[in-house]
Amino acid sequence: MKHNRNILMLAFAFAATAICLGDVHAQSPTAPPVFDVASIHENTTHDQHTHNSIYNSWMNARFNATNLPLKMLLQFSFGMPESRILGAPDWVDSTTFDIEAKSDGSVDEQMGKLPPEQARQQKLAMLQALLAERFKLVTHTETRELPIYQLVVAKGGAKLKPNAGGNSWGTDKNSIHVQGGDDSLAILADRLADVVGRVVVNDTGMTGQFDMRLKWTPDDQPPPMLNGAPDPNPPPNIFTAIQEQLGLKLEPAKGPVPVLVIDQIERPSEN
View (cartoon, one colour):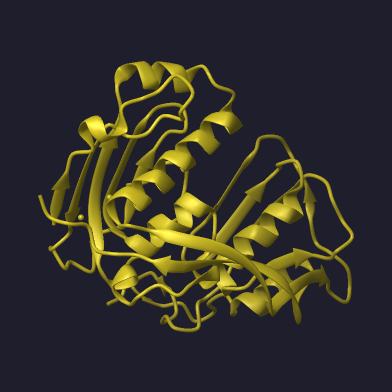
């Protein structure tokens, strides 16, 4: 079953079981907050055109997802790309869920006062606790020697534009944009890793703020349409596009890669 793999942006969303966490998660003064109530239903629409979506703000205690494969929620909650989540059964990728989780308004208020990075880490801990509670998730991390890519400067030199102001970045099914950021090439390497399915290490020797836009044609998709007909000059595959558009290159290598290993996971029980 193939899913529409939308970008995991800072706004996302969760599938056939309604679950109430209730008093099990009574808050103690020192315990990190958890979701007080979570509704989890398996999405049974089986509509391939329905997007996978997460709607989330780091600054509150609410989380919503629609038609979301559990593998995608694992990626979001643990900050791991799909290729580095190992040991999951097939249903984790093929079964999608609709999820609505929230906490008391006082927790919203508390999170709204936190520094952004602290709020983000707290929200991720809440999602990991939800996975452990309702999907009986048990994991551990390892470092394994795996294939990676080194991002290097191609022959002829890099073709990078200095940042013109602003900070944003994102990935679509056939494009990446990076605008500024503290280290633009490190951001690009992270975005490329999501596309090529391997860790990408920035070995260009370059740092700084740049504006980059990369467009390619995925190998498993037909050429894009132009004026109602297939584009006669579609963008090349991603490896060629990186060289032609950015003056960079992906070179295969091997290196230590942190992975998330699934020791136990179950479908959520019905109430």
